[in-house]
Image (tube, helix red, strand yellow):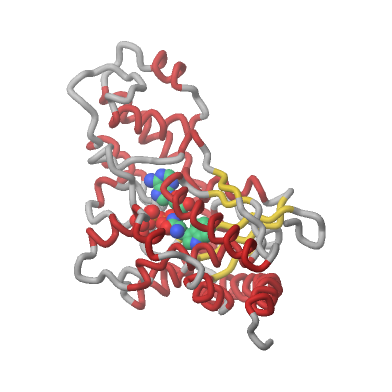
Length: 333
Ligand code: ATP
Ligand code: LTN
């Protein structure tokens, strides 16, 4: 639903649950700024989501600042985008509870992220991990969001948010905009460098599987040098060559070259040369983000001012939806 200036609305979020990876960058954050001019954009650091997995308090606090600084270093101007921290706008938790009551146990049980994360955290399968998608639905629906840019791993959650919105609208008449996903096909899933059949994830304990946005050039080069490929030696994009295909996807994202151009460029060359080139392209592409991040993270007062202004702006929009929801349900407001 357009805002008061007639702009459509974009919302997305990233958890401050670890150091951000090139998966987060290519699959999500890098695409955020393309909406800044034509849409009203809300980009949130979703700290409430991150405590579904146990966090060390000092690290959570540090990463919350860092995630905000990374948003800005990736080109999100705080004057053109509403940048804020989820726990600073209590309406998220409030609508999250309400939507829990419109989300079915069976629906939540089918979520693959819940199944994966509960297998990985068998000692802490808490209720928040299970109801995580209704809080994510609340994030999105609070702002009457039209478009949600995310990686493909979030498609199932997004569909649940749409189902919950339609269910609520059907019970109480039109209340929520039903959001659409924006999933960039070129980079929808960057895979782990040591196991190219699983997603590159910031919570992967094996540091060599993951390239972080803030890795030094030496680290980037070392990780690509060790990346798993195959026993063949041709650089060709193919489903039966997941390691090489993943490296080609990363190379394409940083250079803008097509798969055919890449195949031609490395025709007759070995994996060693190719991995060096991917490492160089990735490190060069990340260098300006790293420099900008270093500048921003040094000014905590500025980051605090940005998150405060962002939360005030977001709360204004969120309050409108929340009071509409409460009235429709029959709460005395
Ligand atoms: P965790 O490892 O803690 O589950 P994550 O790395 O999946 O976290 P999130 O904060 O959950 O990161 O995701 C932020 C955004 O980055 C989401 O839109 C998600 O779809 C996207 N994303 C995460 N990993 C990848 C990846 N490997 N490829 C493409 N997009 C990704
Ligand atoms: N669930 C997402 C993070 C997230 C999000 C959102 C993304 C929380 N709320 C709202 C888009 C819109 C994740 O795990 N990547």
